[in-house]
Amino acid sequence: MNSGTYRCLEIFSKSSGEGRITVRNQSNRTEETKHCQYDWLKFVLEPNCEYELDVENAVIGLIYLSGNDNVMETGVAYLDWDETEKKIVCKSKEEQYDTCYREQYHFVPWKNWMNDPNGLCWYRGYYHMFYQTNPYEQHWSNMYWGHAVSKDLIHWTHLPIVLAPQPEALKQADHIKSGAFSGSAVAMEDQVFFYLTRHYGPLEDGPDTIEEQWMTSSRDMLHFEPEQRSISEKPEGASFDFRDPKVLKVGENWYLVLGTNLNGKAAILLYRSSDGKKWNYVHPLLIEQTERIRCFECPDFFELDGHYVAIGAWMSHYDEQGRYQMSRYYIGNWKEETLEVEQSGWFDFGSNCYAMQSFEHEGRRISIGWVSDFYGEYIPVENGANGSMTIPRQLHIKHGRLIMNPVEEIYRLKENVLYVGKKERIQLDEITGNCYYAKIHFEKNTDFSILLGKEEDRAIYFKNDSDGVRIETYGVKTEGIKFQADVTEVKELEIFVDRRLVEVYINDGEAVGTKIFYHSDKNGCFILDGADMEAVSYAEVYTMRSIWH
Ligand code: FRU
Image (cartoon, rainbow, N blue to C red; front, side, top):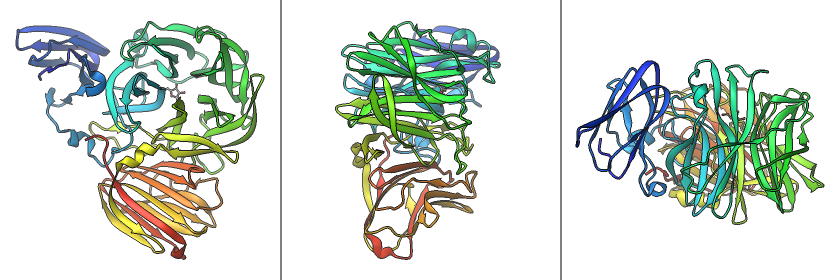
């Protein structure tokens, strides 16, 4: 391997015994050996030199080159590691990215596990997205913060991982759960403050679980100041679930919201600060009266269109339709540090969208959610990525509802016309690449069904009839669950299909549903049928370009 312009080799390696990794500079015949257990190793490299790697008794989860001057532009250079041969192999970018189980125009990590978006902000010319990641495996484990940047919210550049679990906890990683859990960022002129939860405890959460709030800051978004404890006050009655700080400024005051369970009810707690560093507990911002929610996770709180909105993810909760872990929004007025809730609704009716986080940039409130796999539908493959992000959504309030539309930048990816027409059935059985966008206008509400994916006896539909407006799946683990949108009629639809992912926007953002659907084929379909296709006043279907080329 040639180091090119890079000056650092970062390796995430795991070993149950005495792992050893040696990096040999073949140009000047020097070498360095590091021992590893469950470690993030960093080797200093000389640019433009040939290197060789020896790995003994260790498994490599992720490996990349970093440390070049313009990393925000180039990103890290991932290396393909062949675990059987124990050597770096050369694969094309297409081999890694162009698979049927990987989104082509949604954000997805290079490989392994990803969950919540963290620290979303715009700073010095880039949108920054951090995210919860396990760089070693394709399942959740001790948490790191991954990092990516974008200039347009659509094309992302992968950057080095920034935060790691507590080193002392990693040494006992087989029976301790730990990590840099979710949090947020506030960008200022010349630095960014970050707020996060540090988690430490047994594999099964319980009274021995410790969740603490910490903060750090960065000026270049690559190097971070040592973390400081930010909150020590925990209200009486709050459970061990006590996490995911989201910070906002209202006038001169800073507020921080945290998710917890307060005396048996899911709650969002409110803290105040004059400097963003020292926090005082105010009171609960919100207590959800619904029973059997373990806690709120990843709360958000912001001003929007003259109202205030709180959003929280309902942990371990099934709704009456059988949907698991939905997120709810609460719209209200903000008076004397109290949110007087007037309306509420589901953030996403598809139940594969969780832990959304929003931020504001140039007047737009933009939100990104984690496309979660709550029903265990993920299919592990070599170098696979488990987890992706929704299209960034711009938020508004209209008629007491939270309105969500894809950010306008997404339409730049529309490529080839597959269909434009009206007043007829549409049958596209073989959409090469299975990456498309469809828009339909209905003159009046009418019954219809759209087939959005099919393989053998498995299928995913979007339907509107006397049973409601909904996503329905067959032959997969979610069969029988009604992913129903809270709308009574459909006037307009936008559908994004991206390999294993479907996102449906109804009536200009009145309701949005995200659902995953795995099929082992890169060909997709779009078949619109119904008794009265005269009601279709306009329809278009376009292929979408990949963001990874
Ligand atoms: C939500 C969540 C957060 C937590 C993080 C850990 O998906 O459970 O509450 O901070 O994920 O990865």
